[in-house]
Image 1 (cartoon, helix red, strand yellow):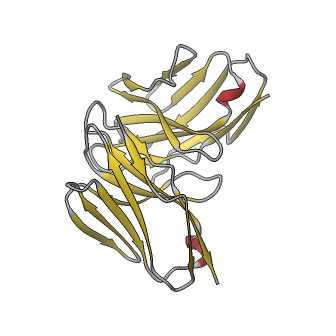
Image 2: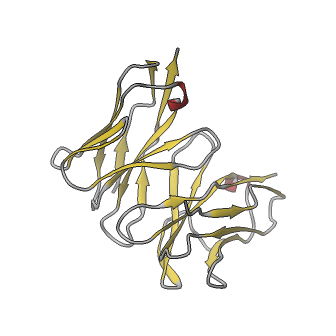
Length: 111
Length: 112
């Protein structure tokens, strides 16, 4: 089976740093994705990890530990436009590589 | 940047009616997917399509659902007899291989 856990909601202040955690238990694993989703819109790709370690991409970084079934998304220099839901998704290593999503973390950035 | 295009953006239909949701994936992509998201809930996998056939489907994707790639560009999801609980945002996604998926902007389906 598949189980992906993320906090439901987080708040942070403009200019700050926030870390959104994700833990997963899956029967097959072939990479972990982070997506950003604004209300009523499609998920947009932020990052991808398949090996352990940190991937940095501008203000966003993502970390993966496969042995711990754990990832985090780090957002630096927060901006108001970063208020959105952040979705952790694991690519199923079996079958045809579908994504299994967590429930998402709603981030509210305040001035 | 290439996009996945979905039409219509909104669809309202009566319970029991058939609906067809349309998607134009990115042209060189080989893997196609439908996901849905009920309001306030997580994104759920429905079906994947590769090499002109269904490669995997979820428990949600029952006999009321079907997918087709009628020509080289379109990818459709049909719901034969809609139920109230089919109301959701439906996302099409496509991918070229082992890295990355691009999602379309979605079709909001409301069944009344």
